Amino acid sequence: MEPVYFDRTYYVGPRGEGYSKVYALLHAALSQADKVGIAAFVLRGKQHLTPLRAEDKVVVLQTLRWADEVRDPGRELPELPSGPRPGRARSWTRRSSWSTLSAARGTQAGITTRTRKRCLS
Image (cartoon, rainbow, N blue to C red):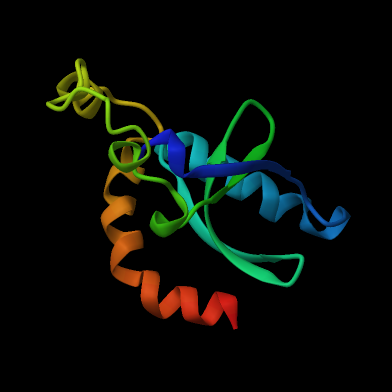
């Protein structure tokens, strides 16, 4: 997923002692699978679709921008050269914990209408 779609980063922790085991299980599952989880949560009255990933000892949540919230650089800067960006092919083959989100861009576009209507209402 392109970094331009990431909005804000939050650290997630257990709500209390009773949730420590569940939190540890989530962190371990994300770490061992080397994948991200997708979650929906509400912040300040607005629902967000977010990736969850495990770092050293904490689970990290990042809010995402919707596709229509990201400006098209071709429209904003018409003097930019056209053509493929250098290194683009390599970036798709690079393996990282975020590689599973490469499909999320298409998934996000497919569920944008239904989910966004629910989130914004």
